[in-house]
Amino acid sequence: MNSTGDTEPDETSKPSGRTLTLTVCSAAIGGTFQYGYNISIINAPTSYIQGFINDTYMERWGIALETPQVTLIWTVIVSAFSLGGLLGALLAGPLAVRFGRKNSLLLNNSFLFVGAAFVLTCRAARSFEMLIFARFLVGINAGVSMNVQPMYFGESAPKHLRGAVAFSSAVFTAFGIFLGQVVGLTELLGTEPLWPYLLASNALPGLIQLLTLPWFPESPRYLLIDRGDREACVRALGRLRGGVAPVLEMEEMLQEQQQQKSAALNSGSAASATTPWSLFKNPDLRAQLRTVMAASSAMMLCGNDSFYFYASYIFLEAGIPPERVQYITIGTGASEFTASILSNLLIERVGRRSLLVGGYSLMSCWTVVFTVALTLQSHGVAGMPYLSMACVFAYILSFGLGPAGVTGILPAEIFDQAARPSAYMVAGSFMWISLFLVGMLFPFIVSGLGNFCFLPFLGVCVVSAVFFGLTLPETKGKTLAEITAEFDRKNGVKKERPDLEVDESIREHYQLGKACSFTSLTQDVDPDPDHKNGD
Image (cartoon, rainbow, N blue to C red):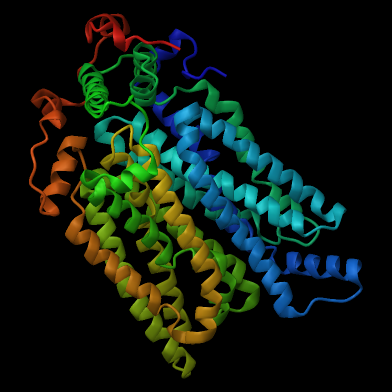
């Protein structure tokens, strides 16, 4: 496997944008797509897996489990995915630094294939414990991809397309949810004999990635700033930009490389990736870290994924006939998929902050209406089940328009190359811990609050809208220096950052229009031979 991601030189003759588009598709189909797909496919075989648990226990011990005991084991199987995701988030940073963004995604498929093997053999082995371990491994895969893929996209995209390319992670997540719901239909794999094949079907997208992604470039920023390989960076950047590497884009990356070297020299240490602990200790990054922690936690604590973990239960409570629930569930996935595509088209026009704040504001409104509709429905008011369902779809649409995609972009835009992997580790850890808490607590919230079960999520949405509206600057089309200055201004910090100033020509003209050949760039951009460190 070529770690630089470079193949034949004639690849650079491809039309502009083609390689970048194919890279996005190849990385995402085995990346964030897996997160959505694996959240979705676990819903359809719920009753079959619970029956398998009870039958297995009966064969071993001669007695049947009571319903609460079966539910507890089922909850452990579901929650193992979140625990694995937490471990994957912690592994993502070191993997991305050690092996690179692209190779980390390729290696990540090993967890998926082992998990699929456990699922396919659990019935023959009469072991529901193998399901727990399989879901844990699949969670590790999702945790790594949810962190590494947005990092890879954010570092590979041009500045004016950075948000749209990074937002494609959310598009593929929503597509995974939708496709998982379709495959889980009783007409396809959602039957008692086929449920192991349903859960193991996640290996197919991983195989597609394993066969296609090695042909595409590694992140140019990783090659230059982390590995110090300028020539490999120029080749990768040229392929991603349609044959030539933009001069000003290279200059901006070289300046960031020099800034990191200068910072390391001033601190008396070698230039290396920042650790999560050093992020917490660095007062200059405190506002940015607080933002990604809040955004990652809110994305899960807002309750959107509760619809996917317990979708059937919610729809039955809303008055949908049991035989129609699986088709209504597909509608929720289609709603988020549609919203994510729309948001992908809007993000470079509307901006990140507006989508994030607007999304949480709309979700707050729909939660209020949904709660009122459920309360009136319990009193027999006609038409309320339909209003409840409309609120569910509106809520998911609002989530897909903003929080679903913007949250994953933020660490890539507001942290530099050295701090970015650790920032994703912290953000991912908070995301998976929050997902685990919601998955464990939501059934108890439903039983305790009944029709008011979504009021805690209302509080999260309102607080999130206010917090991001007050503290998050707009990052669209801005350099890291400009974003950092905006954070300082919004948080009342006044300081000079001469080492982070970017040349005015880069700030104004950093687009794809100006480019140069590979030969002239590697020879003339930076005469310092220190930049030509190879492998």
